[in-house]
Length: 425
Image (cartoon, rainbow, N blue to C red; front, side):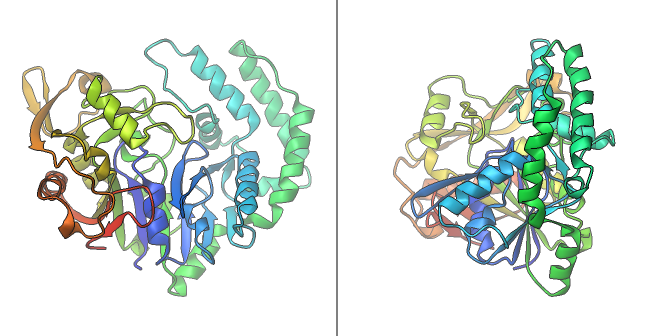
């Protein structure tokens, strides 16, 4: 398989975990390149549901090597819990999973700061953070004040942790939040460091050694394009770059060594948390999409906001990421609808907008320009060939691809590996 970057093309929750799982069969290394435990990649194998937050979805394939790259902010305690859970289910993790020594750690004091900062934000300015400490973790990284996984191997690691907790306590005091016990936290992370020591390596060297040897690399993004810190609906975004450009920054792989970009896009649209969402359905249609799609956050459990497909977002995501192929998911969720709307443009202050405005106030005031297509009103999840889909289903998929540009590579009509129709890939 060519070296492949996989990214989400909406507000996350597009089904990236499943598509990574499908593509891993052809890959040698799977590399997570950004985000943290705020991700929730759901994969169903043999009827068993797995939700992965930090470990690449490729770990569910025997013999595949998985890396957590330098662009990821890593909660060591969550990582160990996730490893133990997989091992209890019979998966071999140690010897197959490695963590970048350049990756920054998300610590318990980051979680405390995350909660306190969100609480302090005024109504209307709350981000809807998962509370996993991701924002404060990335803030420490950019402020050049963070702890990296390589620091976990240092002789004075405990003293470094205590110093960081004391600094965090000063910030917490300013936010009227309770102080943390520096000694208890240091002891907890010293224990975690001993367990993680065999996994902490120079992943950049591993990536380049594999590439030189002709191995196939699959780079796994979390969240989605519309949550990108630069290109998303700022400030209602995550703290990293989930777009294709972030794959090289977060892994150390040269852009010259990326062969293709696969964009994962849902056949309708969802988002979690606050922020503008032009095609959101507030009534029965939204409730139906949420119920049929199981649209509840894999990380937070919060109900997702649901709405019609937004082709303005799709076009924007294709351009920003350079999407070569689309992996479209959850077509089967639409199986019972007699009519389906597609947003083809926005209307704002009497003008038609075909591109995405940067100002969230403008985007929030936009009204979708819809076209409507007939539904197919029959189940599709049992089908294994694109040609066997109902005529109206094929027409709907073709219209989405036409509006967004690019080519269709994978179509998912159900949650399992077997519910996957391969086309151009």
